[in-house]
Length: 345
Image 1 (cartoon, rainbow, N blue to C red):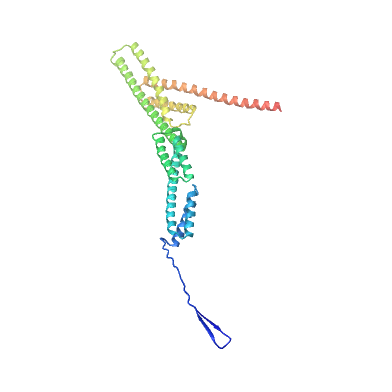
Image 2: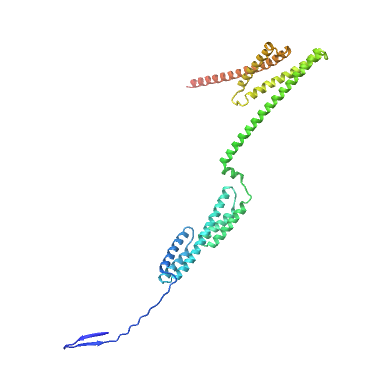
C-alpha cells in the first residue's frame, strides 16, 4: 500500500506499507437445482390441498415445513426426499379414497336392491374414520375387507318386493301386457270352443234328421215298425231336435256378436229375433217355392223356430217393462225430491 505525505518544505514523503489479504472459498454441490426444489414445494402444496378435502394433513404439513426449512438452508436434496415421502402418502390417500367410494357405491346398490349389509357398513365406517385421520394403510385395508364382505352378504340373495318397487313401471307394463295377452288368448280359446260346439251340434242335428228319415222309411216304405212306435220315436227325436235347434240358434248368435262387447242383452235378443224371422222366411221359401222340404220337416222347423221366437219375445217384453219401470221410478223419485225441496223452502 503506498501513502504520500507533503511536508512544510518542498518535499513529498512516500510511505510504502506491505498488506496481506486472505480469502476463503466454499464450494457447495447440490443434487438438484433451486428451480427443481421450488417446483417440488409447489407440487407438495397442491397434493396437501387435495388431501385436506377428505383427510387430516398434519403429517404432510410437518414434512412441508421441513421442506421449507431445507430450502432456506439450501439442502435441496432433502427437499426431494421429503417430496417423495409426501407423494407416497398422497398416492396412498387417493387409493384409499377411491376404494372407499367403490365400497359405498356397492353398499348403496345393495340397499337399492333391498339387501342388508351391516358388516360391510361397519367396515366402511372404520375405513372412513381411518381415512379422515390420515391412516391411509388402515383405511385401505378396511375398505378392501368391506368390498369383499359386500359380495358375501349379497351373493345369492334377491328381494322381490324391492325389485317391484324399483322397477314398478316396467313391472306394471309387463303385468298389463301379460294380462292383455292372457285375455286375448282366453277370448280366442272361448271363440274356438264356441265354433267347435256349434260344429258338434250341427253334426248332431244332421244325425237326428237322418234318423228321422230312416224312421220314416222304415214305417211308410218298409212297414218294419208300427205307427205307434213311429209316433213315439218321432216325438223323442223332435224334442231332442228342438233343443238342438234352440242351442244352435243361441250359439250362432253368440258367435256372430262375440267380438261386439258393447252389445247389450236386449240388443242380442233383438238380433236373434231378426235372425229367427229370417230363418222362418227361408224355410217357407224352401217349402212353398223351391219345394225342397217335406211337409213334416217344414212343420217341425216352423214349430221349433216359433217356440224359440216366443221365448225371445217374452224376454224382450220383460226387459222393456223393467227398463220402463226403472225410468218411471227415477222420474217419480226426482219429482218427490223436488217437492220436498219446495216444501222445505
